[in-house]
Amino acid sequence: MTVRIYRGRDCTLHDMGNDHPESPERLYAINDQLIVSGLEMSCEHADAQPASQQLLHLAHDPDYVDRLFASAPDNEPVWFDEETGMMNKTLSAMRYAAGAACEAVDWVMQGHDRQAFCMVRPPGHHAEKNKAMGFCLINNVALAAKYALQRDDIERVAIVDFDVHHGNGTEHIVKDDARILLCSSFEHPLYPFSDPDTTSSNTVAVGLPPGAEGEQYRQAIAGWFDTLDGFAPQLIIISAGFDGHAEDPMAHLRLGEDDYKWISYQIRQLADRHCEGRIVSSLEGGYDLSALGRSVVAHLKGLGGDGTETGGA
View 1 (cartoon, rainbow, N blue to C red):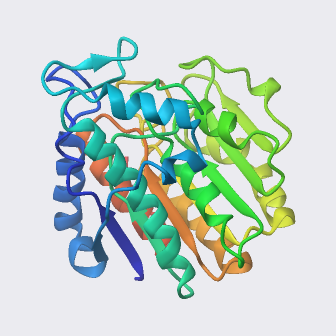
View 2: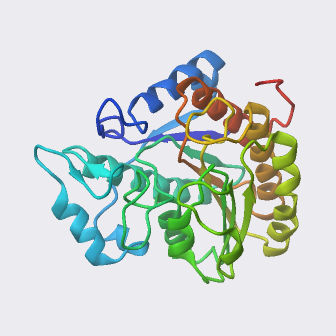
């Protein structure tokens, strides 16, 4: 297995309170399952460096980035909405998360058959060019795509977002950029209550009804793969959200570990055909701690080329 796991030193320090579902415990739960599964030993590991303020401008308006840096509190948290805010460690955590995504791009492009997973937080796919929302401040995946396209050896990047919530921020940032193909699946209707029929020209969006199970999910996104094959990406970036799991309290889909392993393996096969196996995946949602940890293990196994069914719940 060539999967490398990127971590950010301060990503466990961003903490918006005991009642907030996007908690440091998410990363601890993933760590526990990596150890139990044996992947902690078989994967490579790397510590990311924080992204510079200037680098964040690739995905976000400079004025917005400046506001984030200026808003970083010394004491009491600062809230942008009822669920999205900053405490005194958030600025550092979000810079490490963004830095991990960009460093992962560099690493996978330095060889072939390389897959990276950014085990970072806060998540990013709801963050728009100039707006924080949905627990997200910096859009790590959109930033990684824009960063990759600065390279001379990349002209086409695919983003696959299988979080249960629509990645409105990613779509906002990459809208109508013909160099980027965004394939997105999400429960509909659900936060942020996007309409899957009003997406941008470079987006393939699949809305799933509440209660959809694994087989329905697999059939619904089958059309992705022909579109991705036709696009022939030179790099695939994943918004890896696991909150569609049947045990997750934040939504109503009925997916299991096998479904996450399946989609990850399908993406790996696409990467093998078009971009020498090069994939960068970044953690988004997933709020039942046990289900999150098990699902990430399944994801990493799929990315690593294991396409066997596990029988997981």
